[in-house]
Image 1: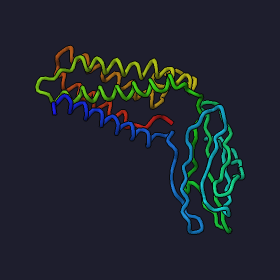
Image 2: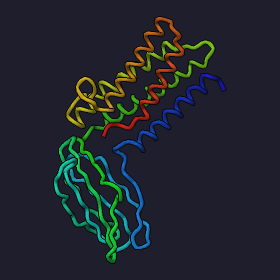
Image 3: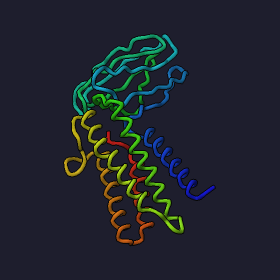
Image 4: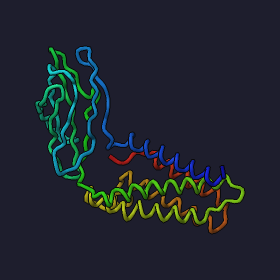
Length: 254
């Protein structure tokens, strides 16, 4: 196998692993767990992100018609009392969280009761769910594709460090172009449609997602500048690639 082909395979694998890691560790990924009630294990999966246009239906499968559920919710980070909502259904319990405006959050938890025994889900702290407006798929898909394709290009460019005669200028330029398109024009559109603000990072805010995109882009610009100055170019693209990988391991902002 040619080294070039091997480097592309490595870059794609790292990108796929990063995408999976970011997906399952992000604050919008459903919170999963298990509890035991009356000797029977009950699994659950609770939403942490929802569109603002309709109520969020919370479901728990108990497979036991004797289990009674109550959903408790309140506005996030307030001193409000929890609102209790009796869950409907038998074997599969369900209740609705009321839709909120974009960027607003609710805290919620559930109690399950059978024969006088009650368990709380989750058992440590409440779940926080954030509401956002709908983002059309024709914006969402290109944004996601561009961001992860940028990582593939970034990683592939960084691997040129291990070539005896690295060819990095063109790969670096493509990395910067794709990262810019995914992170800024498409990122601005995503933010505006989902949350009503085009940019929440520095210097206007402290949004983690926007700031980490900004850091990665600046590092790649510095690397490109140093390539043009011919100051250990392969080393700098390797550093820039490692920075981007590190950035992608940071969960999105809540």
